[in-house]
Structure formats: structure tokens, C-alpha cells
Image 1 (cartoon, rainbow, N blue to C red):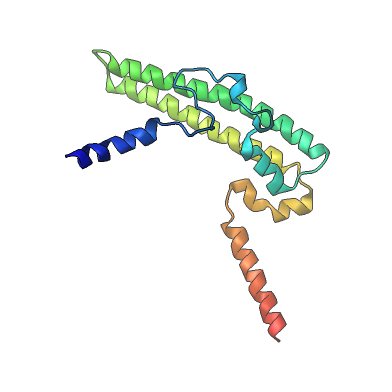
Image 2: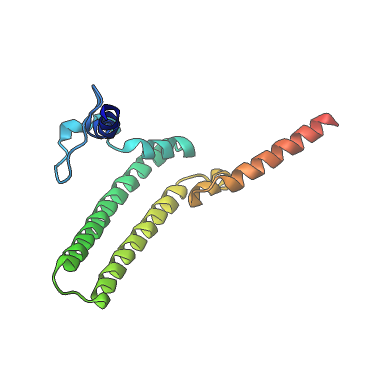
Length: 168
């Protein structure tokens, strides 16, 4: 019986315990205090990875940063609108009377907002992609659509051809 209780309590301990020395995430509905964000990671590792991956240099980095900030502002606005629409849907469904048509209307609105968000993400990728020199664009075309499969396959075929030519 004791083992059973211990086994049941372990997941709760892992879920609610905070790592020593780690930053604590704010509770739901709590504001993120500026001291919770390290100055060097404001733009996030995702954007730094984009810069490293694409190899942007000089003036292109400044333009990319400007595009990133504008993109993040748009994303925050869209996320807010999606969250608000979801809350309105939940509130509507929690009421005593509701219609299926009204639920579908609200759900469709949420889906349109999500589609708009995906479109904005692609527009951001295209804007960043246009900062690359033409030679680099040909090399990094896979990045635009977020797929390395085509690039990796071509790369492996190139290596095989080189190995064959070395054997001859």
C-alpha cells in the first residue's frame, strides 16, 4: 500500500517541484517580470538560430532584427485575438443555451485567425530569405519551406557521386 501511495505521489512531485537555481515560470495569468528575462536572450534562441543557420552578416542582421521585432508584435496581437476568441467560445458554451451554428461560427473565426498567423509566419520567412544574397538563396531554399529533406537528399547524392569519382 505504501509503495502505491509513493508511486502516485512521484508524478506530483515532479510536476510541482522547481529545479534548484532555475528560473521559475509564472503561473497562469501572472505577468512576466522583466527580471525573469535575461538580457541576452530577449530575442530567443529561435531567432539566434535563424541568424546562425542563414549566415546573415552586417547590415542584413540589423534588417533581420527589425523584421523580427515587427513580426513578434504581429504574433502577439494574433495570439491575443486567438486566446480571446477561444475564451468567448468557452464562455458561450458554458451558458445555458447555445446553438451549434453559433459554435461553428466562433470556431471558424478561430481557425481563420490561426490561418492568418501561419501566413504571417511565412511572410516573415520570405522577408528574411530576401535578405540573403542570390547564391545563398539557392543553397538555403529548403529553409524557406522549413524542410531539409530535399537538401539532405541532394547533399547525400553529391557525396555519393564524389566517392564514385574518387574510386575511378
